[in-house]
Image 1 (cartoon, rainbow over the protein chains, first blue to last red):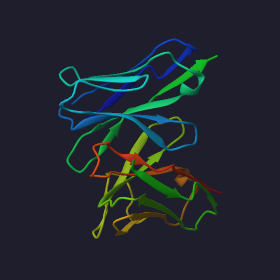
Image 2 (image 1 turned 135 degrees about the vertical axis):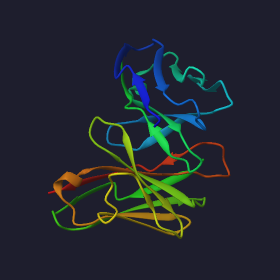
Image 3 (image 1 turned 90 degrees about the vertical axis):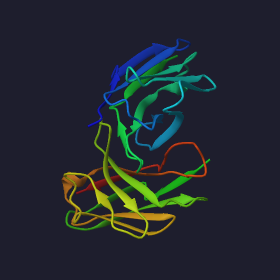
Length: 112
Length: 116
C-alpha cells in the first residue's frame, strides 16, 4: 500500500526566505504527484501537478521536482511572503481510477 | 480552470438526523468524483469513489449505510450522512477531475459538519 510522508510537519520562516517542503512515497509506481495548499477551514487549492514522466513543474515562485526512483518530491517556494502561510499537502495518484494518497501536510508560517 | 462547488460550507445538525452535502462540477462533466474526510490536524482520508450511474465504491472501514452516495448526473454527487452522531463531526471534501485538462484534481471548498 502506498504511503506518503511529509517532513517537516511544521515550519516557520521569516519573510523573504526560501521554503523547501519534502514529500516521500513508498511505491514509485505513481501516475502523478500533486501539491496542494489548504488554508484553515477551507478546501484544497491545487498548486502544481507533476506527471510521472516529468522531473519538475514551475509556476511563478513555485517549483516542484519529482524523483520517482527515490520516491521523493520537493516543493520550493522562493522569497516567501506572509500570504504563503498555510498547510501544504502532497498527494500521489495511485491507480487508474484516480485515487489520491495524501501526506499529512506541512504547516507553514511565514513571519513578517 | 475546473471548478468544483460544494454546499453547504457549514452545517450543524442534531444527533440522529440526516445531512446531505452536494458536490457539483461546474462547466465540466465528471463521471467520477471522490469524497474525503478530514479530522482536525490530520490529512485527507478517502471515503468513497462516486461513479455516475452506478454504485459508489467505499474504502475499507467506511459504512456504506451511514454514508450514502448518489451520483445521479454527470455534474452532481451527493453525500448523505444518515443518523448522524457526534463522532461523524468532521470536514468533508469532494473532488473531481476535468479530463479535458491535464490539471489534476480539483477540490470543493469543503463542508464542516458538527453534530450536537
